[in-house]
Length: 135
Image 1 (spheres, one colour):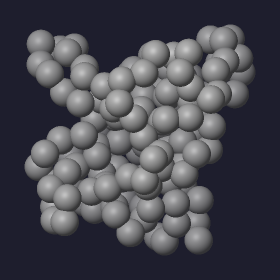
Image 2 (tube, helix red, strand yellow; image 1 turned 90 degrees about the vertical axis):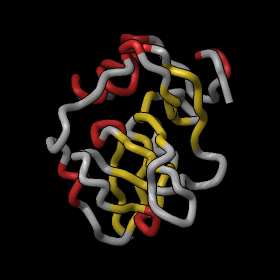
Image 3 (cartoon, rainbow, N blue to C red; image 1 turned 45 degrees about the horizontal axis):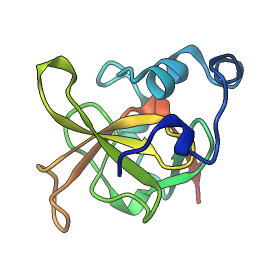
Image 4 (cartoon, one colour; image 1 turned 90 degrees about the horizontal axis):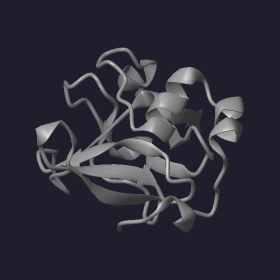
């Protein structure tokens, strides 16, 4: 799914986003930044629960789909159905598939074809783009 910023249910001005997000969350979600690997506490979070968008709290990933990819970022083999959108990212002289929240358009990370069964996909997410809700 390719979308423009006007295609999302939740839209805010840059100033409005800055008021509700930490500087790191803003950089990742709104400016397509990437946190340094191994810096997110969510990388080693393996409790039962749901990972939601840090921008709008839409449920994105279940803990049942989380795995240790060894990359230093929280990784999942499948999102919650209908929660994410994707677009082509051609930055850094390569082509990757960017993953974003389908409700607010926040940049979450990228998806790669080197994950475990059953999907073979690795949704490599920035921990700053997520919040963990236990349960």
